[in-house]
Image (cartoon, rainbow over all chains, first blue to last red; front, side, top):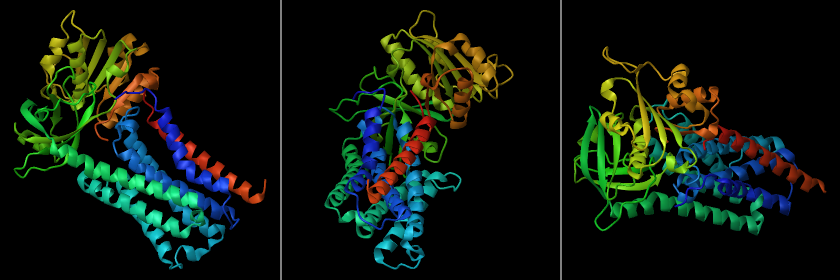
Length: 441
Length: 33
């Protein structure tokens, strides 16, 4: 699968598709009432519903959509477009009222398809609110996802039924054909993503062949492909979706984990996972022989995609070291001629994973040319390395003149990533030289 | 241009501008190489 640098063709396709129904309505100059606000309300609803259809495309982990951006971008974009569509649909009934539809449209009209529209809008608003405020509301990811996956298609179908019967736009055959085609594509993609792909992957699961403890709460799982099947190809730094089938009463949930091994090592791959949540707290109970349903690879957090950058600065926070291990191991395996500075922040000395391996990679004359600085926020008395947090002074001091030309890669908890992005911008590093990966999608 | 079509074109322009502004602002937030 190629990894194009820009997704211009995808962006243009997206814009054309979401605006297509409105363009058709404009070209065919569909009928009265000639009331501006009323027709604007109709236009907003048309746009919003088309955006809702394409939400399925954005969420379906399609390689063609994901490749130039990474799920790190397409998922937040999906979330924002959901908010945009909800805002458009919230204004839709009010514009219709103000434009001459009358207040009865909001409360007094008991036509069944108006009620269908009200229910669709209410479900959408609840869906968006739970998505935006899931963490403050204390809703678990698994419960939220279940609700999201059920309510999404319900909203789409209700919206389609409402628009089909309520709007004059659908007296036009072309609009009817377009609407049916969009609905078929959305439902087809949803079924492919939610049912067909999981079922296909589940028939050929990978196997856990080794479980190694790296630190008190960090484990590396080693996966082997099913017999007779080659391991999937991936770029260093990419990630995978994994569902562990462990039985023994352990949760069977899909989670995404960075691949920590090098793609140059054939026949297996690894993920290094920290026990930090309800599910990952059980990672240490995984045993060799357990099966794993794997969908991969995803992401663009790879030095391979930056062939022009010889000087690289990797900044890792805690378990954020894992994509860098994959990148560094691959550079070592292919003897890549790169100069890498790694700033590795942890709380305590005991939290540092892969310390010995990183030290061995630093050996003089080795490729890549690696220099590592460990930074501890809660160091012991005997610690002689960097102390404190990666603030502007420390970044500037440790990076020196690398700030001028290096490509920066950040993989840290979100607040640290945002802080470092700002620090780098303040130091004059353009966004084009900063690549970052969030822990969560 | 007749009034009805002018109105519909205006609605299209407003909607395109709104969408472009929103997507543009969103994209800047996530701008990465």
